[in-house]
Image (tube, rainbow over all chains, first blue to last red; front, side):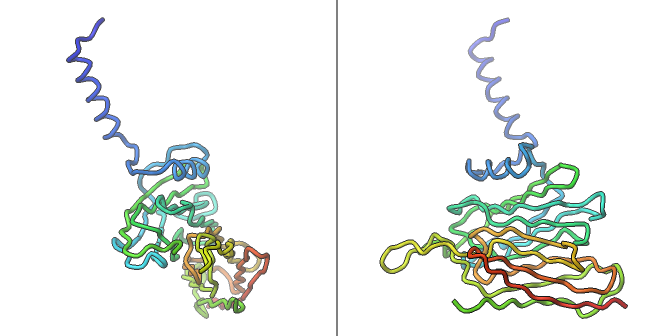
Length: 149
Length: 108
């Protein structure tokens, strides 16, 4: 079976569109960020949903940006969120913080304040006790950067 | 550097099984290791890298922090209270110092 030039061209576009529309979370993550996510989940590709990130759309001061994360989980002894990794892909070092929850936490929610060097994506990856993982990412526009200077 | 002063907000009492919100803040510069002084020398990193909250000896919540956490790190999280007891909060500094504080809670 052989393809004409036109058929090959069409197939390539179709394949590209399929990849783009797939379930993969599409954000412009840097290699360092992707590595950090892989190291955290143990190589698994996290799914979208369950975890939700609460960030401001615009942060005037990158030195203190309030960030909240909550995971939809019953938080019982056999079904709970183990940990949540927060990443900022535009910082010199993408790692921000890792929250560790237990069944005693009652709810998988935490809030803190972080530094953002520039406008970038903030990413939250949640790891459940059964090994599954979920991801959420939000863009935060930063007016004044919070690193160096 | 002034001695970091932890501040913690825990409700005084809760109903058994209630999920309460705890807010903590500790004064600390969280020197990121990215900044330079006037001579252009890098200011060495010094941050609080670990925070733990325990209730009657059991870990409720803990957090590993990286330099991207703001100065005077603020943490808000929840805890399920089934019995009266004491919350113990611990912060660990890069230089090995440990800052601690405790709060009691009663259950009605």
